[in-house]
Each structure stands twice: as structure tokens, then as C-alpha cells.
Length: 204
Image (cartoon, rainbow, N blue to C red; front, top):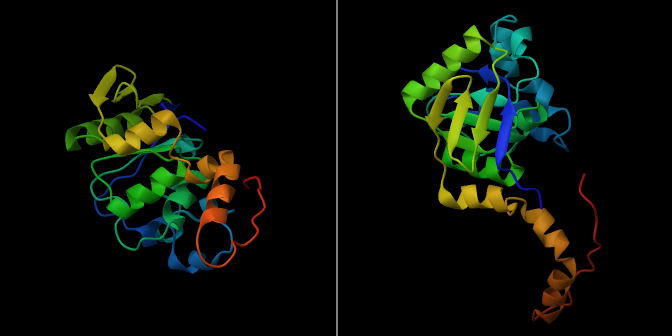
């Protein structure tokens, strides 16, 4: 299992409360058969509207792995495409004032920790990233803090999610595959129709 205890990298600040999932990935991409390529369409309509002035288009934030947001990020519809688009864009954690519950859960299942900071700390991190985009940000799930240069602030996330990341149990599919024979034996003991033959497979 893949343990996630610390994420480090440069940051991409995205200001604004109540950023919904339709803005993160427009609904027309929900018809996609796979999640491949979704990253390039993240915030597509917002980026078009701003004519290249959106933070996701700014060269100084290219390669960022830490997304800095504000309150109620990921609200709106429950589409799992939203965290998938961010993850496939190269982002590996989201630091913000708060998250929609469903967006948070979909992110945990993907291995994308969403950690909460105070409004003042979120603003300070965004200002630092805008002023000094080369600054490395470190999100430490074990120590429950975020650091960026001389800046340090506490982070919070539900204990169950934190434990899942620190133990590697966030990846439910991988956990099933690692104990595939036990799963098959259990399926064989279940009453009713014989279980459908399932073949073990790797993940895409």
C-alpha cells in the first residue's frame, strides 16, 4: 500500500470561496470514458473567460503540486471527475479553509489529501506563493502542519482520513487486490447464485 505522510512542492494559489465542481471540470467532460487527459481541461471555462490570466495558465505556477484555496472548495455536484482533473494536472494536495464533504471523500479515495487551515493562514500562504512562487511548501500529515520558508501553520483533517493516508489504507482497490484470494473465498461462501468469475488485474 502507498503511504502518504508528506507532500512537498511549489504552490498554485487559487483565490475565491465556493468554487464548485462545474468550474473545476466542466460538465461536458463527464462523458469521458476514462479520466486520462482531464488535467488539461481543469478550470477550462474560467481560463477561457480570463483570456490566459487564470492562475492555472500562469507560467510561474507551472509544475506546482500544492493547490491553495479558500472556503467550501469543491461544492456543487458530486462528480469524482473534479479531484481526478486536479490530480491528473499534477496536484498532489489541496490546502484550504474548507471543502465540500463529497469532494473531500472523492479526493481521499484518489490519494489527494485536502487539509484545512485558518482563513488567515490560507491568505498568508496564497500571498507568499504569489510573491515568491519558487517557495517550497511542505504539507506534513504526520506532524499536522504546513511550512513554506519561514512560515508554519497547523493543519487539520478528519482523523479517519489522516490515518488512511498514514497507513496506506486510503487505496481501497489496492487493498482488495492485495488480499484477492480472501475476497474470492468470501465470495464463494455467499448464498445465492454462484459468484461471477473475477480475474485479478493490475491497475491502470
